[in-house]
Image 1 (tube, rainbow, N blue to C red):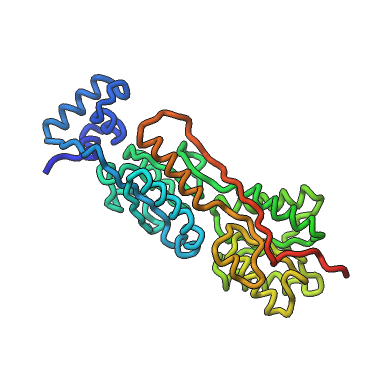
Image 2 (tube, rainbow, N blue to C red):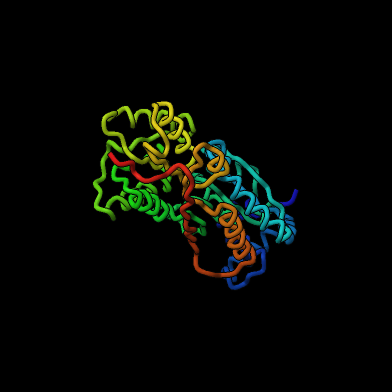
Length: 333
């Protein structure tokens, strides 16, 4: 059996990216001495150059995140697949365990796929192993600040400021927030946007108006119940959910407690998944252009696959307020 690029790299104590560049004929990318050493080793052990027309692109997402937010990521996946088909590439969907730290564990190599897209959140070790392979890579909906890598992100801060600003315009002053109980960057950014929105209108940040939950509908329901029971005599007049799923749970909890949406409490979500239009009342939310995010990610990946040398790009996609029936003006006392 012929030797692989990974094995050549290990024998010579070089990175696979260096080996890949030398074998691809890019003479100015490595020193002449190193290039000759790589070529001699490849010839000695019978390295077979991979087919240049690898047309598969791997899409990878944490299994638990996908289960929790499949409606959201379905829109992104649709955009990714659409753009890959347009460019005559093959879409390979993969859910992975959160503890995966090396692409070897997935049986993936730079010979089997032309590039990779990671969505949601994966470990920094896994991303570093991908970069060590020299594989073109783009991240969607998460960022690793210490790594220089292309990514497509939602402008979470701006979106949450818009939510608070809209509720303020309706007369709301006690605006609660149901946060996802996670260390994901988007959780921090959306909370930051909520605080910034309050500050912009001179409203104080109140810990009693914050509740966390893991993120399923029934967990949003339970979090809202805890929030409302904390001060029955002075409930919030509006609730913002980290996402639509949590917000839908909030609507259910408000109704179960004998209150009305939006007459007693307005509710705002984030993401605009399909079910947001179907709940009663229909959910006011921040619309995220999910399909467009997938398309943009593929466009950036193609640039990397084609070897175009450009600055690392971190694209912020704005969220747009979608007003429906779950929000209204504060009722007069």
